[in-house]
Length: 599
Image (cartoon, rainbow, N blue to C red; front, side):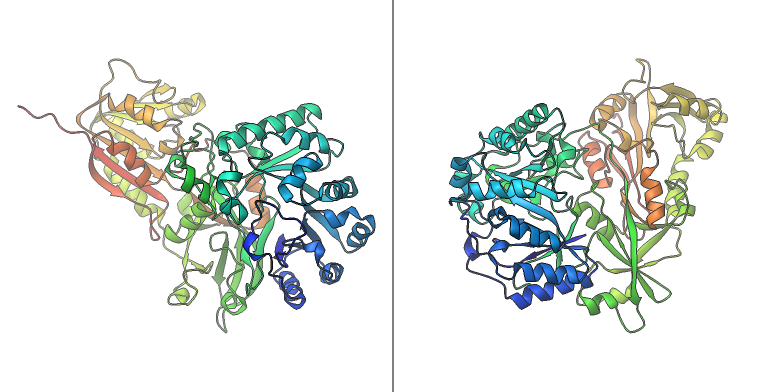
């Protein structure tokens, strides 16, 4: 895990898009940088990466690398590379555990690169590429894509083809610093950036017979289909924290500069997608985005045990040591018998905002006490965690990752009992969509057998239907998707989505089809789950993540998002149960269609 340390903002280039354009006169004191190297080691990082400005301008560079190595840390640089054109400096840094370099190159020739960095820098930077390639470093060359080099990306690919171990990354220019001040002159439409980046990547792959290594950042996935896995940011580089000059302690890296508008609510790939830079969206809007539907999404993420960090006998050890390095969403501290254990999730299936909401607003964190790859009996397999009462009134309560404790309450059985009582009162014709898991067969089965319910179940998995035939005697079971399994003469009193809503590839289309088969005064019941976090040991998490995934979700709608779809169709709300800190992760919606009234 890496820590990024800014040492100052002076630089021997003058990039038009420089993030720190207005603070180039600010440099950190050597003692401040050294203290931050020591703090990174104390926090358990395994590498420190120095950045600026331009860190290689600082005369303390080798001394800092020596200090880092003496503390058992690997060393890395974010750099324009000019000083690394000198082999003797590279050799000295390698001796001091240089393992990682992130180097900027913005043109495939001197004319374009020098135009953007506003210095005679290309020859030195390209010489650095040749010095650093092929020696086993984790080495990325980053190209910031602006209006000036938008049509000049293939020459950069050509320049790096002789170095197949180098990752060439194309980054959308960020509206920050120079990018913000010169917004109109620098920042092209993101759809155009995506088009040119796709062309460059595919050109490079063809030229290298598929051996080239390419990446991108700042471009929404919906604009780069087929290249989603090439996304690359601080987290994919395993940066956990960073610190600027003058800041008292490290902060987690995050994506707060990017936004995902409501357009993305129904997108299957929103978890790992960067969305749009906030500053770009404020100027150009979000019309270039589109939701990608029909792909699987996970509905849970793992917090993996890291270490025991102390006891709570003398107060909170997190508060005593500093709360800011610990991610409010991605870290969890759990108190048990006076000891405090730290867990962390590195999941990219969910955005930072989704993880933080799941943890703090919804309270959907559970300890997995089973040995299964995936829990299938939540009441037995999971124990809920809640924020400790010891956190109430703490000065850091709203910003800290928080201390949590296991609660004894069974939150699943009461929520399920309510669903069962509702289903136990159904009579007439019932359509159950996505019925394969049959979580309530013990309630519906007797009513089918007694003739109180004429049951039609539709399920896309034929094998599950065959199993269900033996459990629901007298039921009519059909194989197919919700919208494909209905017949012209079908008419129903009740429609059920029993934990199948988030498995629908296109819920709007499914609703249009099934509601046309619902009698006036009929009911619609939707029951499903929001995403949740699972605390697991390392071995347990590895086993779960390497196992097969069955029946993936397409989304993780909560009651609010599902209700928005249903209420657009004129349904009348009978009951709504949202997920909260004292509930399970299951929500419920109950609607009726308007009854026909006489004139």
